[in-house]
Every structure is written in structure tokens, then in C-alpha cells.
Amino acid sequence: MSQLAVIFDMDGVIADTNPTHNVAWRKFLDRYEIVPTEDDLQNHMYGKHNSYILNYFLKRELMAEELLQLQFEKEALFRELYMSIVQPLPGLLTFLADLKQNGVKLGIATSAPVENLEMMVGQIPLLNEVMSSMLSEKDVTKHKPNPEVYLKSAERLGVSPSQCVVFEDSVSGVSAGLAAGMKVIGVTTSHSSDELPPCSAYINDYLNMSYSSVLQLINATL
Image (cartoon, rainbow, N blue to C red; front, top):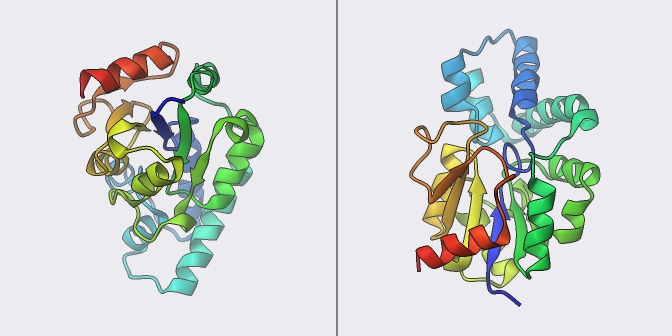
């Protein structure tokens, strides 16, 4: 059994959900007569936890009960929009099967609500078959860029952080993976490589990814 783990963020990494999140946020904010700018979306939405986003756009500190209600409202809107169009990034399923066949331990580490994770797994059944750890916002107390979700994933997978490769698409996610002491591959669905913190590599999709390419990345940085 390989002592190697690959851990995936979900939004923008398992599937390119951000365009739908964008629509859902705009619909949600429109209900509250808030019009976000593109700068707002880039710097205060993508990769951020819902609590930060809501406090930023509503311009006040939300109390726990109201925050939970607003988060549920927005994420329910997202799931309604995305449920019927879930599509994994090109090459992902073949890549996952290759990793699993070679004994790599696999996990998902997302800041999204568990209901979103369950929807994704329900629509992409292979995820449930190959993932040995799946963590959502309910599993941590500190969200990305804090490394807690990645460190907890490594612990659950029984692999040292130095033997983990993370796939991330956001600034906060890449920062979390790096802070956990892991190698990070940037997925450029939400940001260009120039906009992300320095990663070991950058990809647009998984068509050229394989077990051997991940192994080369680990060995090159030992």
C-alpha cells in the first residue's frame, strides 16, 4: 500500500461549480438589493467561507442563528440550480481510478456545507467508492486558509502531510494546503496561475494527470 495521499477541494476542483455559485450568489444578493462587482466576487467570494461572504456583503456582523439561516438559503438555491447539471472536470474520473488502482489514499476537503458534498457524491457515485475521507465545513472549527481541514484529512487517511498532494483552485485553499506542509497543484478554474500563491504545478483539467505524474511531483520535492 502506498503511503501517498491525494486530497481534493470540491468546488472548482471536483467540478467547476463556481459559475453556478456565482449565479446563486447574485440571485441571493438580489433578494437583499445588493449588487456585487466583479472585484467583490474575485476578492471576497471565491474560496471564502459563507460566514465571511455574508458578513462582507451585508456589511454587518451576523449573529449565529441569522447566519445559519442565510447560509442555508443561499446553498439551497445553489443546489437547486446545480443538481441537474453536475459534471466532473475533464479527466477526473479516469485520474481517480488510476490513483485508487495504485493504492493512493484519496480524500475530499471542502469548506462547503455537508449537504453540498452529499449532493456531489450522489451525482458522481465514483467519489463514494474511492474516497477514504470526506470532510466538509461541519468537520472543522477553523476554515481555509487555516490548514485544519487538510491536517485532519491527512490524519484520517493515515498519511504524513509531507506525503500529501492537494488540488486547490482558490487563494485561501492553496494557502491552507501549503500551511499544512503539503504539495499543492493549482486548478485554474477560478483563478489564473498568476493569481494563486506559488504551487508545485498548475492544471486546467485532469486529462494529463496520472498516478505517475503525482509520484514524480512527490519524489521531486523530497
